[in-house]
Amino acid sequence: MKKLIKALIIVIIPLLAAFFTGWYAYNRYQTSFFTYYMEQASDTNTEDRLVSYLEFINQTLEYEKLEEGYEFFYSEDIKNADLANEDEDGHLFTFTIIRSNKVVNEEYINKKGTSLGTKDVNYVTYYIALYNINYTNLATTLDPTKEHKLNVDEPMGMKILFTDPTETDPMADDSHKFEKGLSTTAGVGNVVVYDYGYSPERDSHKKKLGNGSPMPLRYMVLNTYVDGTTSKNQEDVFKNFTSEVDITVIVSSSWANADVVEEEVCKLSFNNLYNHAAVNENTEVKEKIASFTETYDKDIFEAGYLKYAITKYIWWEALIAIAIFGIVCGSFIMIWSSEDAKNNQQNKNKPQKK
Image (tube, rainbow, N blue to C red; front, side, top):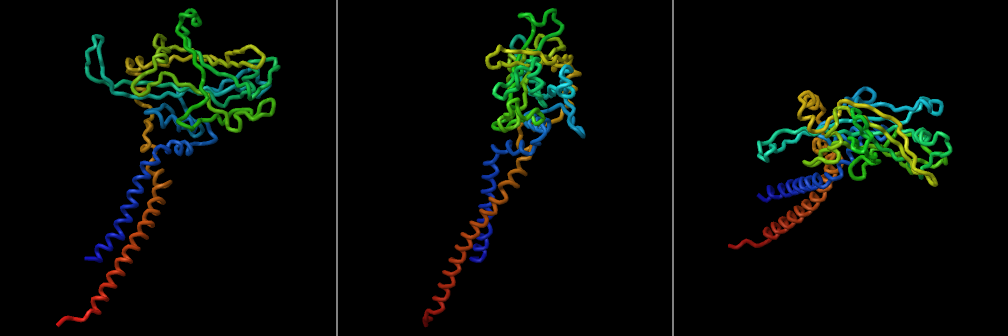
């Protein structure tokens, strides 16, 4: 019986220690997984890194992976023909729109305030990104005289203007228009999606752009659904629009000892951008959205957390637990066995009573 107990101690206790150590590690490293997830994306290709980021934070995403690059909702290289002699084809930047969708089961209330049960509601989000930016060419569009040199300490601002082309005067104060600046951070926590295709690496004064790091992606989010609510200001962008929308990219700079300079560098027209209400009223659009690629929707387990936890932490932490508890249990069994042997010897040496 004692042998069985000793065997159980020396086997089961180290295994239990390994199990609980692994369970602790499994729960402990969940917050660090996203950083690892993004590290697996390319650190040389902006589109690979952007898609990896959007795959994680969205429920569905509209894109197709090709042999070279991707096919998004819209993507175009924007050029300035007047700068062709300066930089080959006068490239300014790549303008891309990536569309995503989230289906939420919501309570349906009629105009009288009566609940009619629940229904699935489709929320669409547009990610507008500018990358492969040529900062010299953009600076030249702001100052064709070239008196101002590209300076890392005076970065250019970039914003997008949405207007309704069907209006008589889309720029009037009472017209449907919306203007928003482009952010320079895309990611969660300290994770950033960089513009790896930007140029040049240094400004006119030989200072490195990005202060040693790659320049960040320029992007904005439109019609975003977040945790059960919509941003009213963003929803109003398309609320009163027709399906036609003009998107204008504006570059601006406030150079030292100079007035603010603004320049429209491109204007694109779209007839298939929709707000949330239009999506749910249009069967054809809903069918199109249903074909989007299902992604992780912030589910770290779907994104591969278990493999990450096992290969990165659990296996060696569990082995250490087995080794430590194996030594402790082994020492305990050795002492126990030694005491048993000593007691047996003493019993043998005792004189037998008649």
